[in-house]
Amino acid sequence: MTRQDWLVGTDRRSEAVERIFAAAAELVSQQGFEAFTIDALSARVHCSPATIYRHAGGKAAILEGVVRRLSARIVRHVSEAIDGLHGSERIVTALVVALDHIRSEPLGPLMMGAIRPDQNNGWLTGSPLVEELAERMIGRSDPLAAQWLIRVTLALWYFPVKDREAEYEIAARFVGPSFTVEGETAFRPENVAAQ
Image (cartoon, rainbow, N blue to C red; front, side):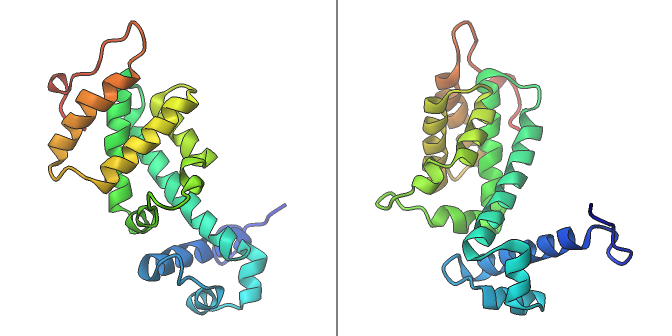
């Protein structure tokens, strides 16, 4: 049973873990994934490396935690934006909102910038977390469609359309209709203002 700490107002261990991950995210944003070290993190949070290992794990576990927290924030924003939407309108909105938030997060460009077509990026395209997000965006379980949506998102990330309205139009005209199921009318952006 965890007890609330009188000083911090929450469980002290949970507070320590969150502080460690916040500092790790800040370090990675400033220096990149490769330059991240436990020693630099311990200096940033003013504790020993042993304390970091005990509360948050090693370098790989911490970096995974940082990416999971970033993903959770993006998922939360996308989920709020697509609540109540269906079909291609859901896909278009999810795609544009996801790209907006990936681009606005300090870690987004770093995380996405680490992906290169000539390298094995199975950690992204094969990630159950990423596939789950893609299926949530689609609104149904469809692993093949999720893989296609991941790749479309990467393409728009690497080759962004300079104008947000044009990007929205591309998503509405070409991406959204590809997810329309039988009997559903494709979403037309001229009927709804851009999100």
